[in-house]
Image (cartoon, rainbow, N blue to C red; front, side, top):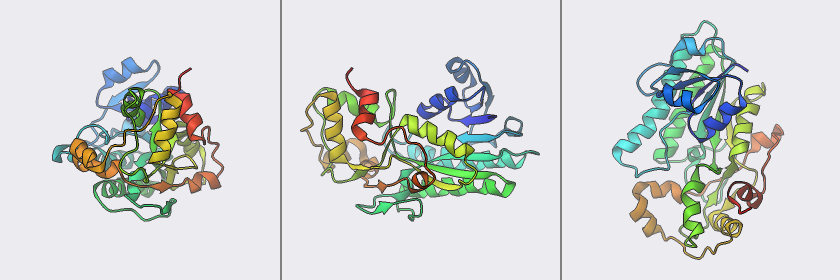
Length: 300
């Protein structure tokens, strides 16, 4: 598979690059990429400022587009929100412009998106046909996916992977949660009734590769495990795996003081299900939350 990766130095991108044979990496920092990986080619690309270099895309089998300003870190200042938007929406627009310049465009574009597409939806069960939600993050996700789908005009099959809360040993949501829980200071967020669509990082990488090779697949794809859980259930499971109590709930007003506007995504309820992946028989490696947590943060 002749692959291109953007966002290759991120959590998912690093693991994906290890599964591929000598991928091309588009990056702001080629020296970082060269030190991170043993066997890659790299080209400089600043997603929100310039179109992607067509010579790096020419004749490739697949582009895995994972680049984007981290959403979970830092407060949502006006500048932070601009970077979140531009890195995704303008970045994807510029990537498709690079595809348009190719004589032989890539066959497939697999772009990251997020379950943030759905917004805060209570107990509604959300498959890929569900409408977008309202608010900043759903607006960004919708525009992000619309830019990616423009690649279809050049004969490219496009898949938008709406990724949930990624469980991983070296990053993701658990990097912020585990230290607190190890101190015995963990607990549910707000009333704990909000749904959390989680997925093990190995299944994210597996789904990216599976989607690249699945010719019947196009459009949105929910990148979540088959069984979403509430925040209260998630925190109990994490505490049990870490062998710590979880009796320190964080009230909504406390979250707002800490995180400001970003509290809206922390407390958003998204009961997302991977209907397309189930129907097309994607082989999930982790479907049980406790087992998934044990594999990444358990005490051995």
